[in-house]
Image 1 (cartoon, rainbow, N blue to C red):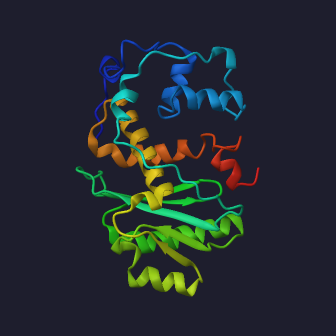
Image 2 (cartoon, helix red, strand yellow):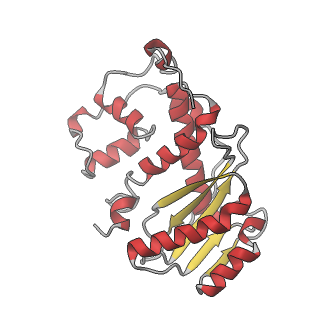
Length: 247
C-alpha cells in the first residue's frame, strides 16, 4: 500500500478554531479517541493510570470532530438487566455493516464480542457475515485460554449469521446456550448495539480529525477498540482491561 505524506496544515485542517489546541486536556481527548470531557475527567479523578494532573483538566470549547462524529438518533432505553459476576458467563455480539467503502484488504463488516462482566471488547474485520461462526470459535478459544473460564451464554440478534449450522453445532458441542433477540428488536441486544455505536463514533471522530479517507475505517475501528478497553468501565473504578485481567 502506497501512502502519501500529509502536510501539517492539511492534517490540522479538521480541528475547530473553538478548541484550545494546546491544552493538555484537549490533547488527551484526541489521544483517547475523542473520549469527551466527562470521560476524561472520570479517568483522571479515579486515577486510572494515564498520569494526568487533575488541575490541568479543563473543559474545552466545542470540538468540531466530536460534534459531527457523535450525532445520532434517539438512543435505546436503559438496560436494567443485572450484569453477571463472572468473566465469560455471557458474551454479547453484533455485526456492523456493510460499510460503503471496503478497507484496503477488502473488509466491509466488523463483528464485536463483548464480555458482560468486564465489557472487554474484541473486534474482527470481515469480508462477509458468513465469517462470524469461525470468528466466534477463534474468540472463544482465545478468551477461555486467557481467563481459564468457559463461555456459558452467547447473546446476539436473530440474524442468519448467528443461526448457521456451523455456529449452532459449535455452541451445542461446547454447551454454550445461545440467546437470540427477536427480529427488529435491537434494544434487546443493547450491550453489543451500544458498543458498536461507541466504536463507530470514536472511529469517525478520529478519521475526521486526521483527514483520513473512508478506506481507513477498519484501522480506525481497531484503534477505537484498543482505546475503549482502556477507558473506565462504569460503574467500576477500573478499566475493562483491568477487570478482564483480574487486577
